[in-house]
Image (cartoon, rainbow, N blue to C red):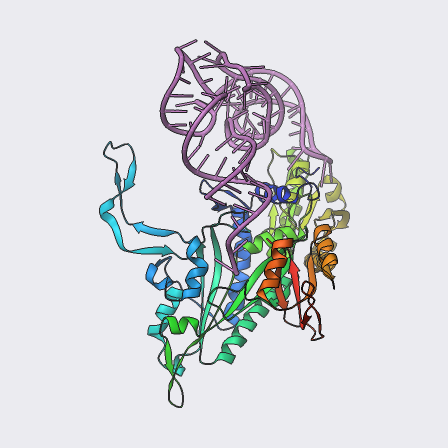
Amino acid sequence: MSSLISRKENYSKWYNEIVIKSELAENSGIRGCMIIKPYGFAIWEKMQSVLDKMLKQTGHENAYFPTLIPKSYLSKETNHMEGFAKECAVVTHCRLKNTPDGKEIMLDPKSRLEEELIVRPTSETIIWDSYRRWIQSYRDLPILLNQWANVVRWEMRTRLFLRTSEFLWQEGHTAHASREEAIEEAKKMLRVYTNFSENFMAVPVIQGTKSETERFSGAEETYCIEAMMQDGKALQIGTSHFLGQNFSKAFDVKFSKQFGGKEYVWATSCGVSTRLIGALIMTHSDDYGLVLPPKLAPIQVIIIPIYRNHEQLRIIEKSVTIIKKYLENHGIRTKYDYQNHKTPGWKFNEYEMKGVPLRISMGIREIEKNQVELFRRDTMEKQLCSQNEFLRLAPKLLEDIQNKLYNRALKKRNALMFHVNNYEDFKKILDNKGGFISAYWDGTIETEKKIKEETKATIRCIPLNSDTKKGYCVYSGKPSSKKVFFARSY
RNA sequence: CGGAGUGUGGCGUAGUCUGGUAUCGCGCCUGGUUUGGGACCAGGAGGUCGCAGGUUCAAAUCCUGUCACUCCGACCA
């Protein structure tokens, strides 16, 4: 019944189709820029509201900094600039005018900006320019700010949600009086993201740090959470960075210490983006369409009436009204689809495509026995149950689906985790199954580069809680104490 | 940014090689019958064939350029 190509047949086509057909988003006329449609945006809004609470609970305040950043700001931190230079959109003019023939429109050469402006690829620079004015004393610290914003990174190759030229995100930027406090902040935010990913998205992750090659430009340490998609490719879904004093030095942000002397401020930043929606899709969904975890589903229960005439519909609607009201009073997001020009079968397929966790359908048959037909999207199981029973069970069912999705995802992820001791196995597993491959690495950039060139696998992370046993590098055979996760990734 | 491919009513497509005013399905509108897994019948509307040039009596079709998408590569926090 599915109108999607199967995952097995063509995974990336399946992904594109699911985004379009479940009406999450579509391409716009501009390369790499997507239109997030209401249903997709509703998921983002759910994510935002949960994350926003978490950020506030950890002491962050929301603020907003400009989209446009003076070019000079970006060039102050050299590493940072080098990291982003190749993908920045630049504003050079501030005015248009008609062409001489009046048929078209052109840049007005007289409106050329004295200093060109960069469309932010991230906001560290403009924020640290402000922190310089805001911070004088240790009493001004820490500062914990967050902003919900769009950023633009001119990507060569884009995919809906996973890598778009413009995307939405949350970026946290903090300033601290000590190195230790800043590191703790970066670690704390990684825990927040892990909590969000596992308990709300039902997506299991590996926590770790990035290798020097993969590190955020401008960071001393990048922490990340990595998730595994159903096709065996890894996806980084959240990062936090310990920025050391790189930005405070670049922007000259010093504070007076409690007992005399001045010190550069210690910094962190962190972020998650609309890419999370890509992770959500690729973790849970199946060949029938989207599967959404109840905690983030815009619609948790869909009610579909089945009737032969208006009189029947009236009778059914009496029960529907009671059920809907009850569910909504218990905080369950419920929709009643009463469209008359679509058949029940059409609606079944539609809401399966859209990943609605629970569906109840009611016809005269059910009404007469005070029943509903209950369907759960995660297992595709159908059953009859009494209306009272359903109302009693609904919150528990949603909770159960949430848990089952996590456990199922964990099982799939674990089935894609391997440990290897030699390079032959490394390549074999990578080609046959993909997944996370845990192996010893000698810690050199050369080895990392060779492995990437030969296999396309990169070091996804150095896990936070790895054992300290020693081994031998899977590539060079040199003694190593670093066991890391390799994977091909998005 | 390099290589390959695609672009035809809202969506999916035939036609392109071999130039002659666009095919089919879905959807949409009207009316009726329907409604338990993407309903049926009848009637109807909708396309300057991505865009811009060129060749030609004539271009969806040939040529050039350009934009977008897909795949591969490079790039990617």
